[in-house]
Length: 405
Image 1 (cartoon, rainbow, N blue to C red):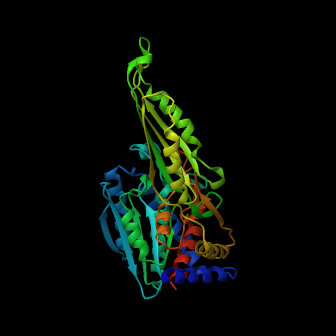
Image 2 (tube, one colour):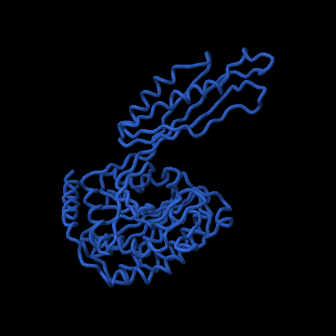
Image 3 (cartoon, helix red, strand yellow):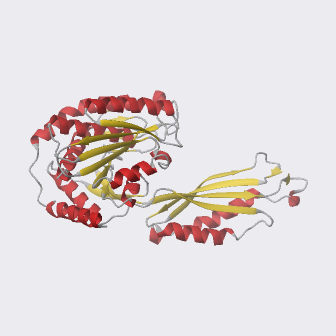
């Protein structure tokens, strides 16, 4: 508890000083601008490798490139299993002579299937670059590597330690990295998550928690034309449950429940004896998970088709990342640094979940969205703003410098 109060004071102190922006670090900006073409070239190499969460070979290739770069930067490198995923996480550590302990987090996996990189390879069109996972989150990996490169070139080691986690299974809930993130978070004072910068040049200072509903219905098969009444239609019961359970959302509390998968039957002339549905659940406060679970049990007991069996279970994923005084202080500091460049940094929340939520749950102040600015996340049009690389690199590097103290 004492540690948290000390950290809160540190965050508020830096936040209070944020209104008095420091002079522009011209040397650092020049370094960042010089590094931009090289950083973009590394990003191209990473984007052109398929590394969906279940693509072990692709993740190993991305990891090998990352380890090669980390070795050049003098990091102590650990490769750790990400069970139940078959791939491995990477933890890189730099030790210095200061007091601040800073955690950086990015992920190597994407949501895209095998063959996507070949079908839609990295390309630059005007001021934007495109490719699968270019902003989420291969851009984040590049930002971490080049921030540490800039610090190394400047001979800056005023931190106690900087640790970088490269996660291989963030897109599926970080199930193979939960313990690692929790352990590392508790050994650091602050954390910067390198998820993409938002299209409006924004940071993320709060996130919703994520979960899901697994709905299964058992019925009885029968001939749909000859003896439909002899069956118990699992599809109809599932449809009934989907409609009534969808009302578990609460707009006033920012809770959403959206059914996204429904499966039943194989032939149109057979009453289906089984059905399955899945819902995405997002909550702004953790207590809403409890409320949804309780109400779900009550509502699902109301059946449309007699003699069917209904099972509804809530799966809890990432916890919410709440906005608080500590994150406000960190965000204000980031805004002041960006102001040194004559640029404005917007502050946003997100319905999407990320590893920053796990860090926040461990009691460690964190801000998110410190990667390259872009848009079209998780779509074929995913892109980055090329000219955002140098300013964002300046921002991340300066934040590390500040929090090293």
